[in-house]
Every structure is written in C-alpha cells, then in structure tokens.
Image (tube, rainbow, N blue to C red):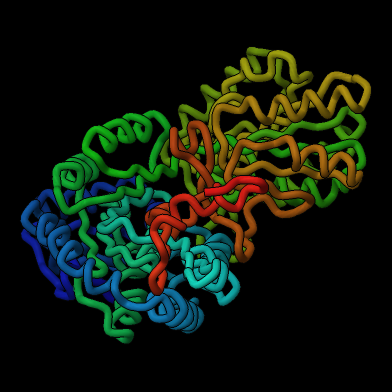
Length: 539
C-alpha cells in the first residue's frame, strides 16, 4: 500500500506542519510489536529519517500546532451563520442521501482502512453496517421529523423546532476513531459546524473518513468551507484549547468514566455543553424460557475485538433453570473464537498489548468465589498458549448468586478485556427473581446498553417497562447490531454523566425553540383568552 499523507484540513484547505505522526500497519504489530512501535517512535522523534520507509509504515499525518487549532475553531465559527441558515432539505435530506451513497461506493475502502488500523475484517464490516444505518433514509427521515414540528391554532402557526448550538468539537476514542468521527458528523445536519481531533495514537481512520468520504459531499452541496475541520494532536492541550476558545459551544468527548466526569465539570465551568461517551458495563438478562442457543450467539459478541468495545455484553444474569443450557451453548461457541490477522474474515480477536489488568481482574474474580469455565491464558497468533502471547483467550467465569456479585470487579466495572462473568441467580419464585433481576440491572452504575432474552410476553413487558437506565434496550436480539431509528451510542450514569441519555448527535448538539407566527392577534385575547373561555367566567 502506498504511503498515505494527510495534512490538517482547515477551512477547506490542507495545512502541513513541522511534525508528523506515523501509522504502522496492524499486521506488523502481530509480527513484531516492539520493533514496529520503536520505528514509529523513532520517526516521530526525528531519530530516523523518513526516507525509504518500509512497507509497514502506511501513513503519516500532520500534527497541528496551536495556531492551526485556533484557525480551525475560527473557521468553524465563521461558517456557522451561513450553514445554519440553509434549509433542512439540504442539510439533512440531501447531505444524508449523498453521504450514504458515498459510504456504499467506498465501503471496501473504508473496511480496508479499518483493517489497516487493526480492526478485524468482520468488525470493520460491522462498523460500515452501522454507518449505513445512521445515514440511511429511515434514520434521516426520523432526524428530520424531530428537528421541526408545526401545529395550527386558529390563525397562528405554532412551531417546536431544534436549533443548532454552534461550533461542536469532537474527541473520538483511539479504539474506534473512524466510526466515532463519522457519528459526530450527524451534528452537522443540525446546522452546526464541526472540529474533530484525530487521535495522535491512531489518526488514519478519522482523517480518511472525514477528508475522503465526508468533505467531498459537503463540497458537492455547496457548504461553506469551515463547516468541517480536522486536526491531529495530543488530547490534553487540544481539549484545553477548546475549553479556552470563545468559539466553542459543545464538546463530544469519548474516554474513560473517570476522566470524562472530570472533563464534564471543566466544560460546565467554561459554559460548554459536555456530551459524554464513556465506559459501558452492559448487562444481558437470560430468563428461564430463553432460546439459549440464540442468547449464546449474542453473548459471543462480548469477545469481539477482544472485549475492547464499549457496547458489548459485559455481564450476564441467568435464571437458574436456563444456566446449564446457556453455559453449554456459550462454551461451544467460545471455542470457535480465535486469534489471527485482521485481514482474515474469520478472526474476531485483536491483540492486547498490555494484559496485566486482565489477569489482575481474573484473579480478583477467582479469589472472590467465581469459577473459571474456559479461557484464562495469553496466546500467540496461532492460538498456542504462551506467557508472551499478545492475544487473550475468550474467558468465561461463573458467579453463583446475585448476592455479592457486585463485589467482583469484573461484574461491577467495565473490564475492556475478553472476560465475561455469568451470574446465576439463587433459586427463588419467578416473580421474586424477576424483581431481583430488574433491581440488579437498574443498580448498575453504568448505563449504555441492556438486553433481555425471554419468550414470556409478560416478562418482556415488565422488564421493558421497569428498566429505565441505559441508552438502548434490546429484546431477543443482537446486543451490538445496528438498527434504523435507534441510537448507536449514549447512556446514563458513568456512561453518559449527569446529562447522559441516548445519543443522537443531531439532537444532543441542538436545543429546542418554540415559535408562534400570527398574522395579527389581539394581545389581550392571547393573555386572558383561556380564562375567558372557562365555563361561567366573564371578562
């Protein structure tokens, strides 16, 4: 693959810099992780001249200085009035349709870039599927319907509409920068302008999808040049620059719960709207009448990307009557999950370069009474167990009883590893067990996604009616699969912070405005009319 070069993209122009960030192919990390990372580090520190680079170096991205960052923010602010004034049929309908078509046309290229960054091909295709749903006709129509509603009362036209906040800054995560950057693009459809930080540790995907996929569509519809800007840099100084800038209105922040909640406070103190996408600790509940084969298939998603995805199943609550069948089905499927190179379409595991926290978490679970069902070792790319392996076996632990389960770190917190605790409830009458399951799910400190597997419609209705935490709830379905209309991200608690909810960026980066348009009403009638209309009331 020829070396890709991306400069900062500011106000429709490409700006080079004095410093560059280099991207090495994910295959080279599997072959020799230390040599590949050392080469990347030496290139960026100027210890190695960037000439005659090996094929393992696939891209370089300009690192933006403070002047470039400030220029991006100023360009976004300058373009906001003109862009927000354009009609929704251009900003939403036409933009979404053209972008959807471009994603379809470039689907293979997008998947190739994701694989280059280390995403297994199967997960790259999953991410592209999500992009197609986000910008599909059904979702775009749903967004449009929520942005503007109009009613008639007499000769008045009453409108409830959402107005753009202004300049939105997006800080995508290093584990999924491409898809997260593209999700943030929906904020543009609300009439906002956007500045994105490509993560310094993995800038290729975000740069590619915004410059090669999104920017051409904006140019085609005649958007002002500063509607989209993308710069690469270190997180701390970039976030500080955003908070200090008078141009910035909203910040979409991906990161850990601990850091995100601290950043939320900084945003509020500076008068910025924080939109947080933090850790997840998703619960899947399996009732006694569940189809355990399908439930086990969905639970296998826990190990996709070696568990380093925020929206995968992280804990399972099982009715004791369903536990034997579920564990048997799950272990059979886990045996099929293997390490390998990301270009292999059958591979779902990714390297875990630092695995000491995995073993610490596993040891904590076993010390507190959990039982190892399968896995628990580091392995090499060929699946052979080895202490120096850069992959981890999919690991299942059995926890007997809801009581005390949250004392286990792997149950209480997101692990971000291929480690799935299966909590089998103590025997009790079904009505008591369902209450306990709902209470357990609702007491989760996090709140990204929840799932239920049950056939009994009364159980389903009770669960759906009682579980209020989380941004998404799915019943008898894939935990991570994307669907039109429904959000892909967002949640409550430690997942979304104080303002957490399901995250539609087009809605989260806009605000409600009520409008009344009259041809000339009597003010006194508007003030006192409702009182006069009361039965028996006069002037």
